[in-house]
Length: 88
Image 1 (tube, rainbow, N blue to C red):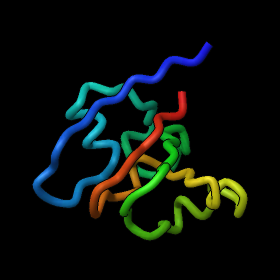
Image 2 (image 1 turned 90 degrees about the vertical axis):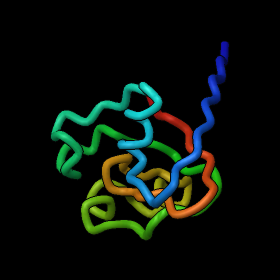
Image 3 (image 1 turned 180 degrees about the horizontal axis):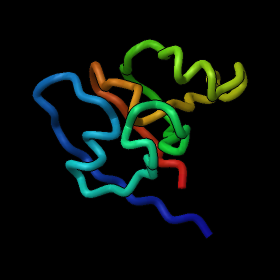
Image 4 (image 1 turned 90 degrees about the horizontal axis):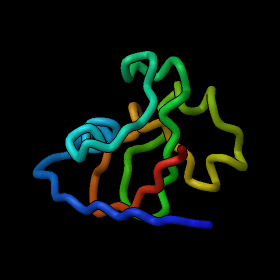
């Protein structure tokens, strides 16, 4: 069975995905404290505007995963309207 929860919010300035998730009380694993080291805060950017891949993200994802929109929530910054899927 599939269940879809959707939460919307507005932000006034560019913000890291992990910070926005915390503001919405969404739990995303980040055992490294959001430093891009553990690779546990994986999300999928379905559509929209986010920052370019960081060197930390390039270490964790292969080309196929990058094409699917996988990002580290602690590294990717929201730069415009965006739709994000939490990977649990």
